[in-house]
Structure formats: structure tokens, C-alpha cells
Image (cartoon, rainbow, N blue to C red; front, side, top):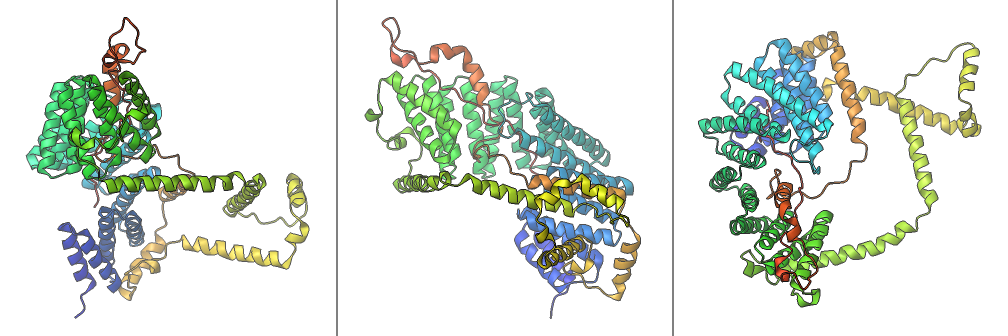
Length: 604
């Protein structure tokens, strides 16, 4: 016997609650295929399908089903459902980096929740808006060299707005007595205050977050709180206390069997012990980080570990070991295309070779000594494959480059002329068409205001039958595009239209005209889509999963700055010490200062 739509949906819900989102989506999709005339049931299926695809990171499908949910909720006049669908759309758009649209949708959720007196929905909407501004601020910071608190005005404004919404959320969830939501608010307030440079405030909020995490036995949240406390204490100069929190972070990461977080904790401990000038312990933790980075094939993390190890060995005066890791750092930086890392590593290698009085010919291949350093050796097969890829890349450059150089510049001009004409015609399609006046006076005035058009267009072209057919085709195409943007409940998958629900779909939908707020939301969303079509800026560089976002290379550099003069390589003279007393550091630079959100999403 065939299962009903509701039975399939209930099984899908059960699987999703058990964490099997892939299995859950299969049942929900089957429910949609069977279909139902129950509009409330179908709306719930759309919502849960959207959430399931969100957790599977299939954001395109999540967006599709949350849009279906919003359309259906508006059609049947379900205001609470419309608010929830708007909030879910906002969360999905945030993950896709479409922050302006996300804010509009989340604000819509907030407005409807306040209108309906839905305090729980209002709290979620406030949290989600804060989350969008938080993510936008982090995105603006990615690649910046500023330390926490040293922010451009626009980034500061974004993060302050995030803080404001988190504070409103916290007040409301305290009123509701929702301790779990309070924990999330405390954690995110700690993170935004950290980015704003308010480290004392950040510590206060993270300690409250830690207390609630322990109350619920949430080990993952507890680990995040310990890590965030360590990060804030670093910038207050309390390095010993920071190491205690990082060691607790490491312990919990191992309990949770989370290798990525374990590697990040080792990296943070290595850097903190460097700040404490306990270089032997720093080396121990950096080697552990290096081992895990190799296990996870995180080449960026390997490069950073080698960079840190080189610095630590320089500080110990072991220039030969430092040179080994500096050369590894240089090789990895070249491989991953890290231009800044390559320049720094090359400078470090040159200084160390000068200090040791060796040349390139005196050195063995940089991979041959790796096993004796305590780290896991690389396989020869992988090294050989890397060299093949590099050779292939070089040959591609040789083949392709002349074809680019040999291009006729007029080709590009023709292309851009053609592109501008198409773009201008698309803009004209969106303008209102004014009826032509019956007399000829205004028509003549209009013609006089645009004399260039007559000279630019050949009259034979505009009067040809083929052109008339083309214009007719464009007109019909544009009218179809307008129809496509109208709500058509017949396009909703899984909807069975019967006499029972026809009144809800036609009567309520037709008599309830959209409000001005809805049209304002639509205009804002459409305008942000124009920005999506622009070229995005170049990527700052590859990210490293085993390296935490909260890096503090610049702090190490500043602490070591007092010793810089005696650490630089100088040409040996008769009255100077031996070469191995120079080149005491290879300065490290910050990569980014972003701080991760609480890893929770308020999906309904």
C-alpha cells in the first residue's frame, strides 16, 4: 500500500531529528512527489526540507524550498509562517554571503513576530540579525592586518550593530527564561567585543558562556569558551593564564576527537609559549600542530607550523634547524601560491644562510632531513607528484601567455562596445513606457533632445521586416518574464489544488494585496542582486583549517621588537661576535583577526 504524504513527511522529520538529514530529505522529497491538498502540511514540509538541505550545506536547494514556504505562507495568509520562512531565508542568504538581502529577510521576520506578539520568534529574529551583521563584519575583516580594536569605521559600525542586536536578544531570552539561548548570546557578545578590542568585556561574556555550557554539559561550547577566553587574555598580556585555558581547550578537543580543534589548540599553545620565551615547549606544540596538519593534508597549516618552528629555533640560537624549517616554509609557500609567505620565507632563508656562512650548493634537499626533526616524514610519491604539477603549470604559462599578448586590442574594444549596448538595452527594458502623444509638438521636442540616436542607427535597419519581428519577439519575451515573477501557486511542488483549498489559494490570496513594506523588501533584494553580478575582489589567500582565526603573529613581533637590533643579521667584523649570535628572529606577520561565531544557527 502506498504511503501517504503525511506518513512520508513524519518519517522524514524523525530521521532529521536523529541527525540523518540525507535520509530525511529523501522521505520529504517523496512526500512532495505524492503531494497533498493540506496547505499547512505542505508548508511544514517545505520548511523542514529547507532546513535539512541547509544542514547538508546544499544552500541552493535550501533557498528554493524556503522560497516555496514563503510563497505558500503569504498565499494562505499565515503570518507566523511567513515570518519563519523569512527568517530561514535570511539565514541561508547569510551563509551565501548575501548580507544585505539576509538583513531584509530577518527584519521581516522581526516585524511580523512583533506584530503577532510572538516573543520566541522575536528573540530568534534579533539573534539572526545580529548574526548577519557579525558575519558581515568578519567578512570585511578577512585579510586585514588590523588587530582587534584597530578597525576601519565601516567595520566598527557593522560589529557594533551586531552587538546591539545580540544585547536585545539577550534581554528577551532572559525574560523568557531560555538558558540555552542566553549561552549563545553570551558567546557571541564575547566574540563581537573581542573584535572591537573590548577584551575585559569579552572575558566577562565568555565566562558566562562557559558557565552555561557546563550547566548543560555542552562540551563543544565549553571548548569554544576556553579558546575564546585564551584569545582575549593574550591581548591583555596574561599569557600564563591563557596557556591554562588553551590546555583545557586541547584536552576537550581530544575528548571530542576533533583533530582540527586539537591542531588549533596546539598552534595557540606554541605561540603563547613563544610569547613567554619558553621556546622548547613552543617547539613541542608546533611539532604536534605540524603532525596533525600533515595528517589532514592542510598544506597552509604545514607552512605556518614550519614558519613558527623556524622562529623558535632562531630564538634558541639553533640556526641550522631554523634554516631547515625556513626552507620548508618557502617550498610550501611557493606550492600554495602564498606570495607574502614566500617573500618572508625567502628573506629568512637568505639571512640564515648568511649567518651560517653556507650557500645553496652546500644544502641537501629540504625534504630529506624532515624525519629527524620529530615530524612525520613526507612520502616520496607525493613530492614527485607535486613537482609534476608544478612543471605542468609552468608549461601552461609558456603556452598560454603568447596567445594573450598577441590579441588585437580592437577585439577587446568591440567586445566592450557590444557588452555596453546589451547592458543599456537591458536597462531600457526596465523603464516605464510612455504612450506617444497624439500631436507632433512633443514628439519633435523629444527628437531634438536625443539627436545622436539618428546618427548612430542606420534607418534601413530599424525599418526592416526582420527588425520588426525581433522587436515583437523581445516584447513577448519581456511580458513572459514579468509573468514568471508573479506568484503562481500552480508552480508549488506537491500542491494538489482541490475545491477544499481553492478558496484559500484564490480568495485570500487575491484580496490581500502585498503591503508597501513587502515591496520595499523586494526592491532592496533586487538592488543587492546587481552587486552580486559585479566581479568579486581577488581571494586573500587559502585558509588553513588547523590554524585558528584568532592569530596573534603581530603580537609576537611587537613583543620581540625590543630585541630586533641584536637579532638582525649583520656583516661580521673583527670586533663582533661569531655569526651564530645574530639572526635571532624571523618576524611573523598577522594573517587575520576574525573571530568565529558560536557554531549554531537558529533554523526553525
